[in-house]
Amino acid sequence: MKPGVAKRAGGDHENWVCQHINERHGTEYERRRLMGSKDCGDLTTPFVTECKKAGALSIPEWLRELEAEIVNAQAPTGFIAARIKGRSEADVTAYYAILPMERMLDLLAEAGHLPPRVDREPAS
Image (spheres, one colour):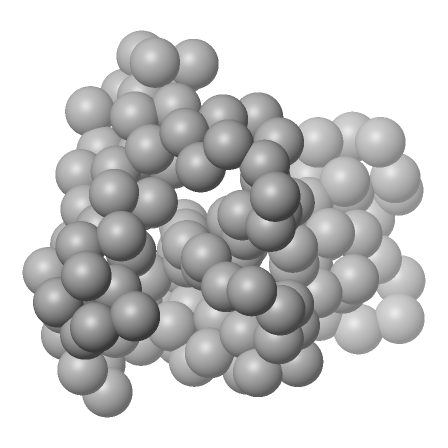
């Protein structure tokens, strides 16, 4: 795929994720501008949203990128919105939400589904 086509397809992917969140929750988030090494995720959410569209899942690489973006954005948490190959690109409900186990457990505790941590501070 040519670079311009890939960039446009990635932008469409980010727009679909953003539109889905906005329609589902009545928010007005937008796509972020590219920020290079100071990247803070793909959307202007108060948490990091990193959108991925790839033929193969590169989860370890994506999680390292997500953690760096959470630090850059000084955000409490974040997740990866990954498109499943073979599904409609515009059907965001069929995407995977990927995040590290510790972040998921922290979110469940914050929502009251688990007791607070007793072993150490929350993931940062």
